[in-house]
Length: 60
Image (cartoon, rainbow, N blue to C red):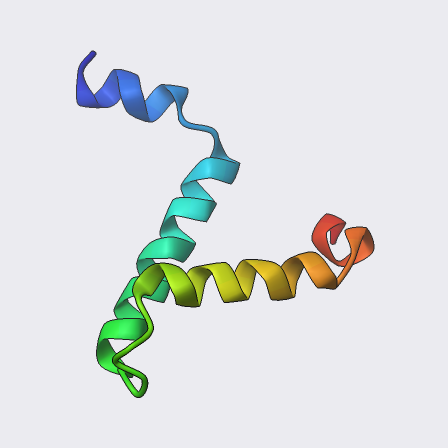
Protein backbone atom coordinates (compact mmCIF):
# COMPACT_ATOMS: atom_id res chain seq x y z
CA UNK A 1 0.00 0.00 0.00
CA UNK A 2 1.16 3.48 -0.79
CA UNK A 3 0.71 6.53 1.41
CA UNK A 4 -2.26 7.79 -0.57
CA UNK A 5 -4.01 4.40 -0.37
CA UNK A 6 -3.59 4.37 3.40
CA UNK A 7 -4.90 7.93 3.72
CA UNK A 8 -8.04 7.01 1.77
CA UNK A 9 -8.79 4.08 4.08
CA UNK A 10 -8.47 6.08 7.31
CA UNK A 11 -11.79 7.51 8.44
CA UNK A 12 -12.18 11.14 9.47
CA UNK A 13 -12.94 9.98 12.99
CA UNK A 14 -9.66 8.08 13.21
CA UNK A 15 -7.79 11.05 11.74
CA UNK A 16 -9.28 13.23 14.47
CA UNK A 17 -8.30 10.75 17.16
CA UNK A 18 -4.74 10.54 15.89
CA UNK A 19 -4.51 14.34 15.73
CA UNK A 20 -5.73 14.52 19.32
CA UNK A 21 -3.03 12.09 20.44
CA UNK A 22 -0.43 14.20 18.63
CA UNK A 23 -1.65 17.35 20.39
CA UNK A 24 -1.64 15.56 23.76
CA UNK A 25 1.93 14.41 23.13
CA UNK A 26 3.10 17.93 22.29
CA UNK A 27 1.32 19.32 25.34
CA UNK A 28 2.94 16.68 27.55
CA UNK A 29 6.40 17.50 26.19
CA UNK A 30 5.99 21.28 26.51
CA UNK A 31 4.26 21.27 29.91
CA UNK A 32 6.09 18.39 31.57
CA UNK A 33 5.13 19.33 35.13
CA UNK A 34 4.90 15.73 36.26
CA UNK A 35 7.82 13.92 34.66
CA UNK A 36 6.81 10.62 36.24
CA UNK A 37 3.66 10.44 34.12
CA UNK A 38 4.06 8.91 30.72
CA UNK A 39 2.33 10.20 27.63
CA UNK A 40 -0.01 7.21 27.78
CA UNK A 41 -0.94 7.86 31.41
CA UNK A 42 -2.04 11.37 30.46
CA UNK A 43 -4.01 10.13 27.45
CA UNK A 44 -5.66 7.34 29.47
CA UNK A 45 -6.69 9.81 32.17
CA UNK A 46 -8.28 12.08 29.61
CA UNK A 47 -10.09 9.16 27.95
CA UNK A 48 -11.50 8.13 31.33
CA UNK A 49 -12.65 11.69 31.94
CA UNK A 50 -14.35 11.81 28.53
CA UNK A 51 -16.04 8.44 29.15
CA UNK A 52 -17.45 9.75 32.42
CA UNK A 53 -19.19 12.63 30.62
CA UNK A 54 -21.76 10.29 29.10
CA UNK A 55 -23.13 9.45 25.68
CA UNK A 56 -24.82 12.83 25.17
CA UNK A 57 -21.49 14.63 25.43
CA UNK A 58 -19.76 12.18 23.09
CA UNK A 59 -22.56 12.44 20.52
CA UNK A 60 -22.39 16.24 20.42
